Every structure is written in structure tokens, then in C-alpha cells.
Length: 328
Ligand code: LMR
Image 1 (cartoon, helix red, strand yellow):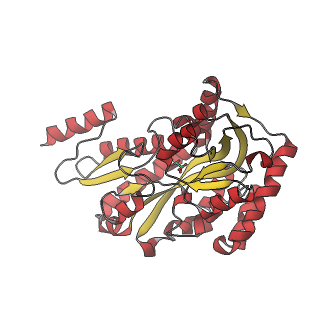
Image 2: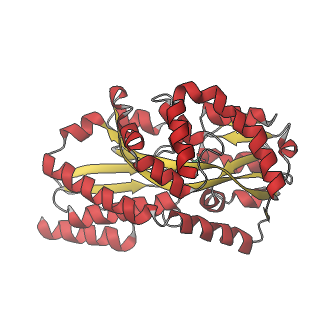
């Protein structure tokens, strides 16, 4: 038994394939939607899998399912509450039905860069957000970084008026819908795995995302170009079910949290670099990347920032003030 367990885990690590779980091990399925090796979330999940399977062998085993191969983000939280998956890391925009507190992360031009996001999340207010969904059965464990969002479309976008009348894919977030409505554009919520096809066939004209997602999903191949707006962020909550988490033996829970914490620190500090590499890879592949002048960028700020007013009640004026202080 022991020998079989060791070789199965060794094989899993060596090939990057699913580690075979052995009798008596706690099975931890982690479902996500990005690629597993060129993306801040994908790399972090793969590292977590590797470490859990090495260090917790005999106690627990992790199977990571990337690329929406198990669930998309519209399905995964329900599956988690049903006990079919134990970990996921949907973007903060996708918890709309569980909490309105995360709306602050979707507000345009709220954070000037990913370091500011990190500082906000590690503050007392940010850490408390991990527990904002426990009544609904979900527990946030760690924030994972992706990066700043850019906007792509089927035509060049330099002035905000260039986006008017276009259809943009958005994540399932009321803030993001309001943001595109402010541009006189038409937001359409859609799962991540559907976006490439929708851009290719013209079901939507454009989308907003980080460099790693625009590269990883090849959106740039079916768009006129991408404008470097840095107007918002995509970040994640590594989330689990309260029932499952509370049911773990204390030593398993402690070791898993420690490994997760270490992976979070290691990979969050690399997320900016992963996105810069993806941006360069887009340029190298012939993708068009457009820069805004200071005046042009200010025009986007002027049109989009008033959206804050619509959501101040959900996110708290004091939290907006705290975020702005960090930017200063
Ligand atoms: C999206 O749906 O665009 C993103 O949330 C995907 C992801 O997980 O980065």
C-alpha cells in the first residue's frame, strides 16, 4: 500500500497529472478556469497541489482541475456547497449572490496598482472580508492576485466614446455592468470559457481582462487590439465550504492552511511579473497594444468613476476612503 501511494504521488508530480488519491486520504478537489502554467492563479494552484501531495501524503491529496474542465465559475460555488468540490478561487466579481462587500474591488480606478490592492486586503478590513460569506456556507481562506484590467475590442479604443454602442462581455457583477453602461456600451455577462467564441463570432465586440487572461485565452487573436487602461483589477478569493473545513481534523486543517499561506505569499509577489510576461507575449505574437495619453486616460476616469456613487452604500464610504489613502 505504502509503495503504491508513493509511486502514484511521484507520478502525479512528475507529469503534472492528477495525483491518485489513496484510501484514507482526504480528497481535495480544486476547480478553476484558467490555464495551469502561465497564469498567476494557475501557477499558484499547481504549486499548492504539488506541495499538498508531497507534504501531506497519507493524510490528504489534491486534484486540481484547470481550464473550466470540471466547473465554470457560475457552477462552482453551488458544487462546493453540495460537497462536490472543496476549493476554488473565483474572481472577487463572482461572489455577487453571497456578499456585496467585494464590490469595492470592481469599482473602476479604485486601486492604482496591485500593491495597493495587497495593502487593502491585508488590512483589518480586508481580512474580515474573508468571513463575510460564512452565513451562506462559504469561507474565504486567502486572497490571490491576478492584476490590472485592460480593455480590448473589435476597433481601436482611445477615447471613452469609442466604446459607445459596443457590446462588452462582463463577469457576473453589477458594478461591471454599471461601468460599461456609463460608457454607453452594452454589458453582457458570460462565463469565461465562452468569451473567445463570443468575440470570434461577434456575439460581443469587446471585453476587459488582465494581460494573463487576454494572452492565456488568446482573446488578442480575435480583437483589433487592447488598450492599456489599468482601469480596474481582477483578484481572487480562495474559498472553501464552512462545513467541509470545520469537519477536517485539526492537524490536517492546520497543515493545509500553512501550505496555502506560504503558496499565497510566494505567488502573490510574482503576479505582476506573470502579467508583464503575458503582455510581452501578446506583443511578440503580433497583438496590438495601445497606450493612452494622460489626457485620454483622464477622460476614461471622468466617465467611469461616477459609478462609485451607485455602490457606496454596499461597500462603505469608509472603505473607499481607506483604499484612496493607500493610493496616495
Ligand atoms: C473572468 O471571468 O474573466 C475571470 O474571472 C477569469 C479568471 O478566473 O481570471
